[in-house]
Image 1 (cartoon, helix red, strand yellow):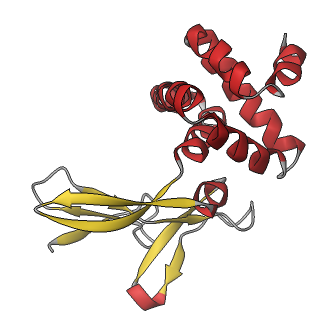
Image 2 (cartoon, one colour):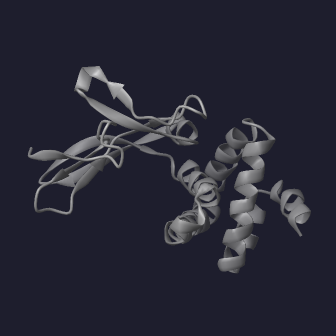
Image 3 (cartoon, rainbow, N blue to C red):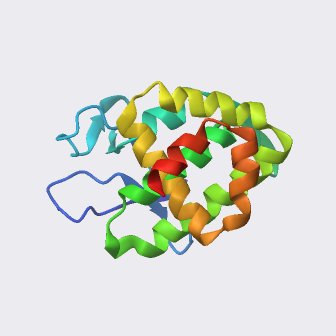
Length: 177
């Protein structure tokens, strides 16, 4: 299909991104981070390529929905559930360093838009995704609540619908002030 590897910053590391020459299309291969200290690309021999380990990706991929990708003919794909996607975006927005503030802002905007729609139309999905996040422990809750707090500061209209859909957030957000 004409995909060419995009060189990694460290030329000794295998590429985890591929691009079509002369087109904007780029494909990044990702895998869940298994061990916090092992961030080196993971070689997938079967496909003769490597994937970049990312923290929190396992939560996003744990449950998915079937979707269709339409480009001429339809192709069935697995996509993250919208609620998990939104909570993942909140967590990732807080994990980014200051040099990627624009990406962090985009993460918060995307999370806010998805959370607002889900709070109105599918609050049960939010509840299930939040319960799964809570089951991962206090560190996960702390990161998600920090993201929610940042989101609410930028987009205050999302607060009440979220509190209506997830009453347990009241206590978490009160602790933040």
